Structures are given as C-alpha cells and as structure tokens.
Length: 337
Image (tube, rainbow, N blue to C red; front, side):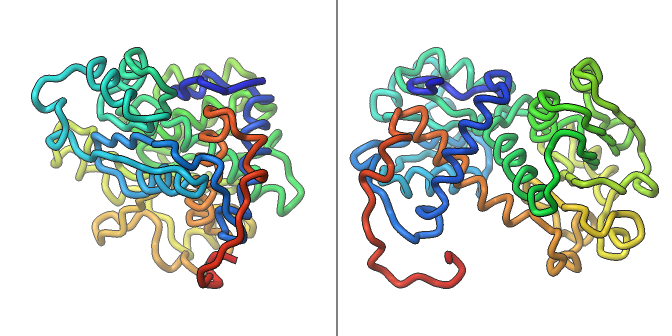
C-alpha cells in the first residue's frame, strides 16, 4: 500500500497493516539515525517545519529526521512570527508555503487546524499536533516503542495491560495512542486521572466497543501493576487559567519507591515529554533515571525513526534509501553507536 503524496493528519488513517509498514521502514532507518552510515536520498528536498505552538522535541525531531535523509529544513516558530498574526488564513499560508516546500510538518494550537491547512497545501502535510485533538506521529512512535519494549520479554501488544496517568482530558498523545491500541486485541486499559481530567467519553467508548477492558479510577495505589505505565504532563496551556491548572499539578507523581511498591519488576515507564520536573509537579522523579525500565529517552529516539519512515513513505523514496548510502566521515561519539 502506498503513502506517496498522502497527508498524515490522523491515526484514523491507519490499520494494522499500515502501522506495520511504517514500523518496518522505521527499523530500516536505525543505521542512519545512529550515524553508522548516511543517505542523500532526499538531497535537494525541502521540509517546511511550521510550529505555531511551543515545541522542542517534536520540532527538532521532524527536522533531524529530514536532515538524516539528506533534505533541507526551513522553519518558522510561534504565531507572532508568522503572517497568521496579521490575519492571513491557514489556506493562504498553505498555498504559499507549499510552493516553497516538498513536504510540511505543522503544529497548531487549534483542533482541526492542520487538516484545514492541508486543504490548501499542494504537498503532503504531517500533523505535529493540533490542540487537544490529535498527535498521530507521537502515537505511532509510542506504539513503536511499546512493541520494541515488550519484545524484550517476548510479549506482543495483543493482550497487554497499559495504565495511562495524569491529564487524560487534554492530553492529545493518549487520545491518539488509545485509538491505535484499539486496533489490537484484548488490551486492558487502566485510566488514572482526577475526575475533571478523565479520558473523554468518546475515547472510552471507542476502546470498549473494540472489545477491550477499561478501568477508570483516580487512585494510583493498586492500579500500576501493568506492562506499560504511560505518564502525562498536566497540559496547563489548555486550561482557562494558570490557577486552574495548578490545582492538578503534582497530583500523580511516580518515583522509585512508588514503582517498587506498586509496579511489576519489568513495568515499562513511558512519557511523551517534556516531563515537568519543577518541585511542585515532579511527575516522574529523577530517582527513576537509572531505572532500566524508564523508556522515555528511547521513546524520543524512536520518534526520529518513525518520522524518517513517514517522510520516506510520503515522498515515495522508502525503497531507494540504501541506494543513496554514503560513509560517515566525522567523529562519532559512542552515544550514537
């Protein structure tokens, strides 16, 4: 099946076959991401990297993924530095920027905005997050991480138990991931959040209607005996006021003591990052940094692989990458090996 020329706007575009296709290509990208070799397959191609909402990891990950395939990146950050602040429509912006680019990655604070932008684009658009709505590339990299982490204990995604913790109302990463996981079989979901920040009813219904078991609770104790614990940040930028967001900061903290008492010895800890390490929040304590089951940095690494795969697929070069291989002449730190 072909992704060539397609927008990547929603996880609804994916079935298990398409997911596996992305993952197969992502795995083939590891030598390039680790700088064991390089490729120039996208030499001359330009990524328009448009981030109208604050981002570090996702923005740089998209850019690095494109660079690692040999392409060039042109980007704009923040609403105030763009023509949108002057009243330009998303359609007009798309028509202009797509004439400068071969593919576009975009993040915007309003739900549905990236799909609206894509209607005016002449090139493929990848959704880097649209408000509290969706984050399809994050969901794919999360699922890719889950598959890799569980494989270490020879466990499939089918039949696993995942506990999602924190702001499940505004957290677009858990919305998109839940939709992808619904495609699998016999998964147990434990959704841990304050009542005011519970997973939206439509997501819970989707999971249940797909035949999965769902437990909704506001208690950590007794609910962390899962294969995957997926912690989230309080999405303070989505709240009506900072004071409202502050009510929930630090409500669900995970540290090594809690992990030892309530998790399995091999429970994998995930987080879409950034984790809020401020004293009043400290959602994933630094004392977990040496825990071998803390997968948050492997998760971020996997983001580059998945985004490389999506660029290669949407631009139709997924079978040509190795043809344009080159040696790596510069010094390599062991961190890349």
